[in-house]
Amino acid sequence: MANRLLPRCLGALTPLLTVLLATVVLGGCSTSTSPVADPLGTIPTPARSGQPAVTVGQEATKGPIRASASSDRVHLDVLQGLLGDEPIFNGDFADPSALSFSSGLYLYASSTQPGAGKRGAHIPAISLSRSSGFAGEYIGDVLPKVPSWTVPGFQWAPSVWARPGGTYVLYYSTPATNPIHCMAEPRSQYCVSTTLQGWTNGQCISRATSSSPAGPFVDDSSAPFICPIRQGGAIDPSVVIDDRGTPWLLWKSDGNCCDKATSISIQPLTSDGLSVAGPARRLIGATQKWEGGLVEGPSMVKEGSTYWLFYSANQWGFADYAIGIAKCASISGPCTKPLDHAWVRGGDGTPVQGPGGQEFYQTGPLVWMVNHALAPGQEGNSAQRRLYVHLLTFPAGQLPRLATGVPAAAVAQAIVYYGDTSLPADPKDAFVALVKRSPDGAADLDRATLLALGDQTCAALAAGSTAQQIVDSLAKDPLSAFDVYVAIVAGTEYLCPNMTAQALKVIGSALDS
Image (cartoon, rainbow, N blue to C red; front, top):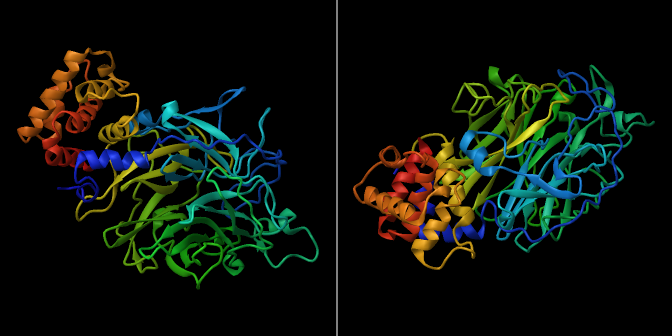
């Protein structure tokens, strides 16, 4: 079978949906808080070498857009995002990361500035719940207070680790000295000199802890956690766990702040994730033309014995920004780049421009990617960035790839609604109810017609039909290809479980196509 991830994790569809429901992409989130951050002042953003400066007072990140002034609900269209490679959230949500666990999913982003009637947040967060369908809830600032050695309003690229003991560590980038621009005398050891802006703050990495993924996270540090100031500082932390359960932290040396080279490094942490346990190890630098001399935003996924390092490159506020990939022999390298171009880039007939800031999370054994891309018509340091989600697949002998949108959306649909307590106990009625949750034509069909669709799907699987053959034969008005893929997944679960192996083959090949 082409998809190496599926045979390992989907030995049967019943275990698949049962396991995935435990860590569903839109599982029920029961923890919620109201925004608690004090409004953040508007502070001039230090310019990065090679990028235009941000105008004093300009909002670089606007944050979640609520459904109404009286509600914390935000609109998240996961299915349409997967189906059409569209943003799942049209608010500004830069440098996203996600944490999946048994009762839900949390999404985190870089700091937001206050707007009309809206508080700013050091680390804004959105929770998702099955009970609210595909809606999300803005839960406010999960890092309500930053330590005195830093500057509020510039907390970037958060990454949250769920420790085995049931507590959480938040890693984030933040300026290393207060006041900003290193105007104090004498200057801090963390100040750096730039060609364009003179002395300014090095960006470094800090960490905070909480008993809940919804926060509040508390940063009790008196100095930066990781701050290689001779390399320009460090930003974009991303936590990854090795086979022995040891946490490691990926980060970018922030050389483009001050006319130095950039690179991606990884560093081992202590078992509690609060201290470094060894020196950093350099994985890659900017070596290819498309990277524009800048690599950043690292994240890592292991498949089999291979560690895949993903990174963003080029200038974030422009269309040339894209996602690269490197293949690593171990968690600490060595890593090589298998392509001479970006792994995922904008353009190519799509309206998506400047994808990057990618992070990964798992629901059961399925791997999903969240990333941002530029809002239409925007560029530069004041550009807004929209939130996207994709399913990752691992074709045998090939590079990882983003799954085809329609079958990926069908898998998400089945994961969201299979096992919903509101579904009927009778398998046939449950099949009908699940397929009718489709936003396409199946929602309007009667029970007999939908059961006939299920029977036809099972018969096609028994005949050894391919995914495309099944879609071609069954996707007739008003049924869409999405409806048919949902019927394959749900039909195998409820109507013909003996067709599990063939269904795995069909869905796997469709995701990889």
